[in-house]
Each structure stands twice: as C-alpha cells, then as structure tokens.
Image (cartoon, rainbow, N blue to C red):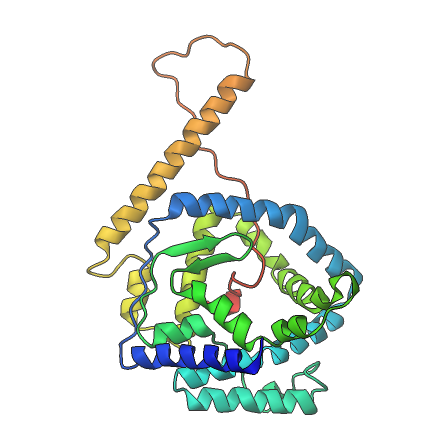
Length: 315
C-alpha cells in the first residue's frame, strides 16, 4: 500500500472516531438472535481446530520448552504493542498510551527485541486494547453476538477490530506486504504467532470438555472479557447485572435467550432420538410409563484460533 492510501485510511478512521466522540458507552446485552447460524459456524470451527489447529499446537508444545514458548509469547506481545498504543490515543487515554509506549521502549531495548519483559518488573503493565474497544468507548453499540469462520467469537461492533487493527497497525501485516519469499515463507511469522496463541489455550480445553454446552461457555466468556477491556477491569454493576440477566430491563432478552436454548436442546434431542431409531434393532413397544430419553449433551469443544477466546485471568 502506498503512503498516500495508508494516510487516507488513518484519516478516515480518525474522522469516524471523532464523529462518535462524546457518546456514552453503550451497555452490552447478551442478545444472541443469530444463535442458530452461530452454532453452525462454531461447529465448523471446532472441526478445524480439532483436526488441524490443535494437533499442530500440541506438536509445538511437545518440541519446545516452556522457556522457549515464553520468549516467543513475549516477542509477539511486544511486537503488537503499537495496536494498543494507537487505540489508546483514539480513546483519548494518554496515560495508557504512555505506559504502553514505555513498555515498548524498555522491552525492545533492555528486553532484547521483546524476548524478555523487564517492563513488567518496572511497573509498566500491559494495557490491552483494540479498535473494537475504541468503538465501544465512543458509544457504538455492541450489536448481536457473532461467530466468524476460523476467527471465532465476535460481535457486530468487534468485527471491525480485525480489519482495522490488522490492516493498519499490525507489523506482521506490513512484513507480509513488503516481502515475497519462496513458498510464501513471509507468512511463517504469522503462522507461528497463531500456533503460539493456540498453544497458550490448550489448558482451557479441560473446561470446555466438561461443559454441557461449550458454545454458551465461550460466548459468555468472550462477552465478559470484552467488558473487562472496555471498562479497564472495573465494569459497573449495571453491566454485570445485564450480563447475568439480572438487570431490571433485561428480562425480555433473558426470556429470548432461554427460548433459543430450549429450542436448540429440543432439536438436539430429536436428532439424537432419530439417530438411535435408525441405528438400533426393532424393540418391543414401550409402555405408557416408560421414561423417555433426555437430551444428550453436545460434544466437547476447543477454543477457536486467533485469540478471540479470552484468557481466564482477564475475566
């Protein structure tokens, strides 16, 4: 991309944010009107993860030590700091931008290109943020929850985070644009980042494996983590109540979500019953008092790729 086009993108983005300035943060609601479609995409992502991404991540863990993975994680965390710095400035959070800039300078020099994290010992904590948080800070409503193919959990507001942050602010994207190696080797740093990211969530598989409905678990964890970032770790009580369906105006949304959940469970029970009927031998007709089979819990799932499943520490 030539400098003039790049500058135009930045100006347009800044104008949009300034236009929204002064608006209050719109409280998030756990509305999921697209649940039927989302579940299908979620199931697709599960298959991709189980058959492709997770085995690669497990292989990566097997051939690397914890120290090596820590160095790789530190390097990418430092490399992507410009995303947080720019978004802090767009949110008019000068203090957060200054702290992240301090982290970038210290870790890039004393920390040997970000391999180590001396900034953390100096009290310069990571202030994680992105363009989705920026839009939230300027009053853009969250919109319905959305599951994207390959990318995982998102929303109508957060869906803009990846193209804006990745296209304009991610150093890995500039590296790929500016280089053209044999066998597309320029993509290797991005692939390593994704593998490292997925490997860091392998321990979370236990929670999903034991969950009756992994879709609900991932959705709720994602939305809670987004509110954690938007309110810098201290969401107001009204937001927490809305998340849990306890707010005075949230009953209608809660009833809708419950209806969607019951409808999905009924469909699952019908499918399971039909599968058993096809695969079983003819049996004697059950009496009127025979207990019917209950819905079978869906299969366990794993977090999807590219970092949209929040870390437990951040929730």
